[in-house]
Image (cartoon, rainbow, N blue to C red; front, side, top):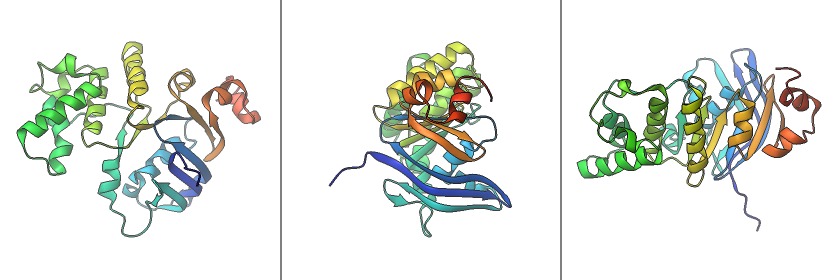
Length: 254
């Protein structure tokens, strides 16, 4: 039997906020240990789509989802699904760094503590590994017990990535993770994404098409809630099949 390398699969996925339809018949597959970028103009549904993957839209009143959404072949919208377990498996990094008003150490230890890790030596190991994997350890190892809010913006964003890694997710969702960062901090996050895909599946929403071209293996172009085109990143940027995609990636509209 042919093995399917997809970790996320959607089929005719639709979403409404009250009467407004935000996603229209989205069918796509996200491959394991790859970086998938979602591009498209503001308000086209990119963030809404990735928020369906870990059921963040549950937090919004009057939100209704129809269609199939499988994570590791499990329908995550079926009744009785453990949403906490889903959010452990699928971490999320937001547009603006949002460290907790705690120390660097406590930011990273927070998730493992919630999931039952109590031993100091285990927490120490997780914190060190997570900060190391987020390419931050060398910069903060002497500042672990200082407030995380004292870090630079780029460091705070990598701390949020470390916090996400600490609960050992399989998938990391990134919603415009560099939009509040300068070019040097952005380059560090992009390099980190390249390293992370060895162990994780990454889905990134970005307005920056150069960034999508640099970091992703696959790209989906969205417009007005629809997935207009999805394919390998080189094909989307160099040989798009749809006129709308071609117009967007060449800057003729956006």
